[in-house]
Image (tube, rainbow, N blue to C red; front, side):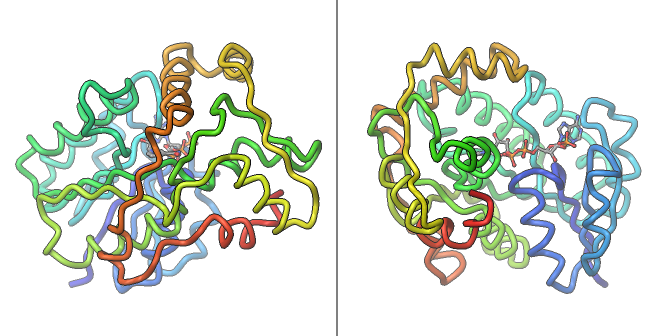
Length: 288
Ligand SMILES: NC(=O)c1ccc[n+]([C@@H]2O[C@H](COP(=O)([O-])OP(=O)(O)OC[C@H]3O[C@@H](n4cnc5c(N)ncnc54)[C@H](OP(=O)(O)O)[C@@H]3O)[C@@H](O)[C@H]2O)c1
């Protein structure tokens, strides 16, 4: 029988890529969306069903989890993400889900690490203690964050701003994360494993700016900004203070070169090299 895979956070940066790639497999993909309208364009994908869920409302999860075989567990970066993850794992247990792929983050295993990592580690524990077979994926920062957060300023001014100095980061393309998710879901040899996923190289943001310039044919500059300016910008965009502070801590780790490690896990699991930033810049040039 065709298996049903529920993907939560399905309209998000990594979630929508996972839904897209899984839709090409012989499975039913149930896309758990926060609002039906945002998920509307996924209806065109083969084998994809859309279901509305609110992670804060356990009552809304019942229908989404009915007859689900496997769960790709993605939660947003929000103040109550721990409670959301707990609600989702509890529903998975109640409804007999038989496998969870948890989308965590690189650094979740570090001690004491940073706040973002500690939150993720806590959520990993819910999965580990659920009694349901699982695989945990810990990706590096997403290349696609540049599309979400910096494409407007790059388009308007040819500049992007972050408080990260010359720190190198081994960003990963979300298409490669989705390829790993697909691979681990369709085999049972990854049960109980924790994988750290990065892109193929660690680049400074100055180097990334040069590659974006090369891809778009226009001058792109990276501007290092003080932490305080980055904090004020996030607060102005209504990022809750504890989240903004956690993101600043991540940027400080970037600046200190603590996010520059490269793994070959994508290659090992998918048999293909992860996409380079040059490839990403070329594929997404229209966004910049
Ligand atoms: N971005 C990175 O560089 C990075 C790197 C490593 C790990 N991660 C982790 O990966 C995960 C996903 O990140 P992302 O960047 O893909 O996030 P994202 O783009 O913000 O997506 C979050 C998703 O969750 C949905 N959502 C939010 N509140 C919800 C609720 N109450 N009920 C149901 N759905 C809700 C959102 O839908 P709406 O938009 O409709 O609310 C959206 O589809 C996070 O845990 C993050 O920490 C991210």
